[in-house]
Amino acid sequence: MDVFSGPRYAAAKTEEVTVPNSTEATHSVNDPAIEVESLYKIFGRRASRAVEPLSTGIHRDEISDLNVTAAVIDASFQVHPGEIFVVMGLSGSGKSTLIRMLNGLLDPTSGSVKVDGTELAGLAPSSLRTLRQQKISMVFQHFALLPHRTVIDNVAFGLEVAGVSAAERKAKAAHATELVGLGGWEDKLPSQLSGGMRQRVGLARALAAETPIMLMDEAFSALDPLIRREVQDQLIELQKDLGKTIVFITHDLNEAMRLGDRIAVMRDGRIVQIGTSEEILTQPANDYVAEFIADVDRTRVLTAASVMDPPPQGKTVGADGVSVTEDTPVADLFAPSSESNLPLQVTNNDGKVVGVIPRLSLLSALGSIGENEHSTETGSDAPAGSDEEVEA
Ligand SMILES: Nc1ncnc2c1ncn2[C@@H]1O[C@H](COP(=O)(O)OP(=O)(O)OP(=O)(O)O)[C@@H](O)[C@H]1O
Ligand SMILES: [Mg+2]
Image (cartoon, rainbow, N blue to C red):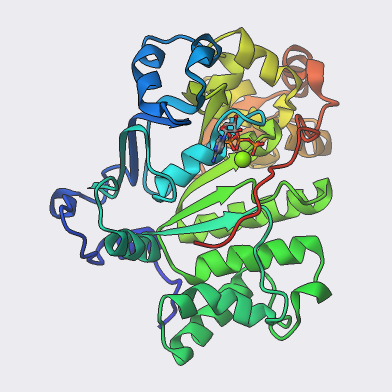
């Protein structure tokens, strides 16, 4: 059997997880994959005392007398099956703490995390381990590769820990290695690989686990920009077939906008906005978000659909114009636009023409959105995550 065939998510959903207190029997495929409600993580001896004052909305600095660190404050959101949900924020804003509560590596100070309808708090350690093995894999910034193991054995490592038979893990690891484009490199050692390739091994390891949910904490942040772009593209490509539920953490706004179906912006422990790239760009929730997005390359985020004119009434749109799809980034419209004197035709998924973009409209759209067209890797100079991770 092709271990990655079919809509993985739907397939994985039907598998039974034997966890006590599970409400999963009533959890349907369309329900949220992850549900977070009023979640707090506060570090320090008097952690729980800080919840109440923080719940009034005050800044964490205002409770400095309690001597605690409020890492995550009152977070609520849902991640839908098959979605890439990006959590973005500056260093120290609470991203890693948040993601560690999603797989139970950290216990919340207050609030709730449900994975496929199962509340993590109160699960016995063995049930939590089972749930992780079956549902959640994690990719870290520092790939956590074992230096003396070959690529394929690194990819198979998680399966080995989970007690999967040698034959099965070999098949799954080989397939995952192939998926991330490392076919032919199976027998190399990590030291023989480039940074980008090592990150692919980390990704393959997570894929080999065949879990419906992947948590990625700054997974691409250690890579230089070109390679980083390449693995981002690869993830987008893979995701088209795999349809995983992905929570992706980054401090890079452009990365967030490229990958995220929706983005949660964190500041000082709180989520200050959740929305699509376009929503965040066009309706920033406050001055902080507005300032954050000031440098983003809008031509990469805004699409043909957002700059097109309605198709001309009464005129059939000829087959001689150049067509682009609705979701083509504005940045990718210039080349096709220059190929023909006719307006670009914008088509929907069914191939129907839903709009046109005359060259002049494209240029004027660029005028209104393109004040920042030179910017690239926003925030990539922020300190890299300090975590030295060990696979759980
Ligand atoms: N185990 C811990 N004990 C005490 N404080 C902690 C602990 N882990 C994190 N913190 C603090 O919680 C806050 C949020 O940290 P977190 O690592 O979640 O931020 P982050 O957004 O992931 O940052 P970065 O981008 O640097 O990785 C920080 O002030 C950090 O110092
Ligand atoms: Mg972090």
